[in-house]
Image 1 (cartoon, rainbow, N blue to C red):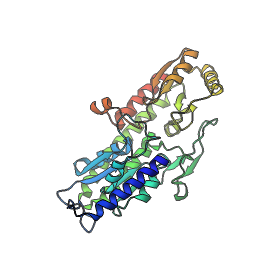
Image 2: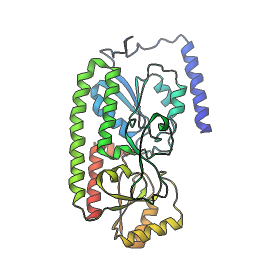
Image 3: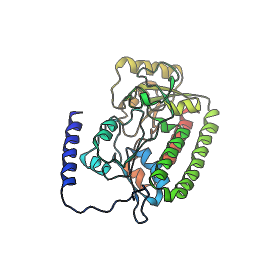
Image 4: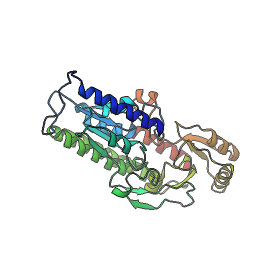
Length: 327
């Protein structure tokens, strides 16, 4: 956080100096009424991949979207650079997940001087699951996401988008923000939302139809990212570690997981593509199981981006992995 504060101080000074100089500025993309001009696209910044993907699907060719977290980067401990913050000073819309996912967002929003920026906390209004590090219970306790807990930084599980119905609601919030910033293109944003809302409904049905018939319901995962997916489809998440993906489990916890896997005939230990599979491999080796990837869809690799993968394709890969593991 000291490094972050130093960056913030430097950015504020730079912005102040630029504001006082005589360098000509580009015309604003919005007019005095907040309407987007005909020849300028809406400048949109997003905090990490799911927000970027949802924004790009709604905004299409009407926006210029910037994903702040680089491809292949684990977003939990990421912090914005000076260039990111300078970009937010010129942006029209900033979209972030909230629920404690972006630990830096409150400080950034308080520091920037872009009074016209529309900041969208996409998870606002959703029912959140409490985050637990021991996760002894089959499902986490649910609580309403209110103004009092919107910056709780760790109290809640932030991975709401792994339930397609939550992702659909987040996309609707993004759509509404684009209409607020650019009302002239309201019909365009509404049409895109209607299209993808149908895709979320179809994805939800695929999960329900496939998982209902599976004989096993226990999944062992590297970290506690899949509570919303499990709650939506009747699965039992057994995490090796809590919400922090890079923490190291103690030997007692590993022993508990091995014993659970033996008792419940778990055939696959899941890990995430951006986190070391070492612990998953140790557990799998101890019980004669396999390992496989279950993606929290937090970031896509360069290869996935080049292949045209998105939220929907990765979630369907997840479904295929679950079907193979739980049959």
